[in-house]
Image (tube, rainbow, N blue to C red):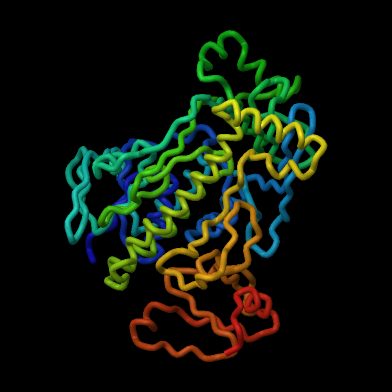
Length: 478
């Protein structure tokens, strides 16, 4: 098929989409409105383990992890008291640690270098999309330089998506009144190891909160919750910004690398698929960053979309495959918005009852360990389980745990366990662009030529070293 897939937006989600499509042998044209990339500020910084696995499929997971900062401890404070602590193992059974802090600007540069090396990807800058039309055979994106046609289109053009607007889709939700001042500060804070710190009602930001995240190069990301009427220009001029920074870093020397002001939103398009157009990332959903669910979920959107588009183009997808993108990633968006919405109601209470609840939880948590699990400073990102998807065969009588952070045993529709196989590679290194069949002490006989074409070499689990994986997958012999 000669026509490419169109990807609108050359941010991380758009570039990952194009790279994953290339892994399936699919040509894509990335249409980016800006004439050049501006790599400034940290923006999204926290990359989750399973997302690093996705990035590794396009040759970048290890690079993103290596250039970032791994943290395995998070502490939460209420005034002068530490009231909560979370710890993670460094790597466990995975190839990557649970979270790595790599600024979005660095991730974008690594992705753009990889895109430039890929002959199946064309990146066209200065191509603002002004309209979208489609028919039974393809999609046409109208740009400032004329129409561009493709078989499918992935809209990854951010929360002000021109594609979403062209489709006539609303972007319903809400915006929070409080603002958040975000600064990248290079300073030595004297911590023994990199860790995340969250402060409720500290004396240097009374009534609100402050979040610290480590970054590469001795830089710290500091987020202050500030009032709606906060004026950054006035704070710069009257010395207020410097006083805020010194309240965190102390008298040690520091360098202000970047400062910006944000208002956070919780919004979602009603559909993530319209015909041959799929919405991904912020074009489909935006949410508060506490819990690092924004960029991570956008890259999971790209991962879900790419293989389905590849099969649909090849005529091997079946009539329900593209629609399953909206079904699965729409459900994931709803879950992420629910979780981040709960977090924001704790961080930015809007009613007297919500304010009283937060104060009660934090006050009790100083002495009562049982109250500490009620503190919500952001439920950290994790993959969404597609147990209710129409593509998933599962037991309808089994109730699967849904709450964030709940231990989850491997199940159909959930992330596949990872393990090093007897013959050297990790299981997740074998994922895509063809389907993987695992056998446990039995032969695999493809039913027909179509099945044989879609599946790569079977992976045989026939050694004692493979027993842990076979047990985790509940893969009985023969």
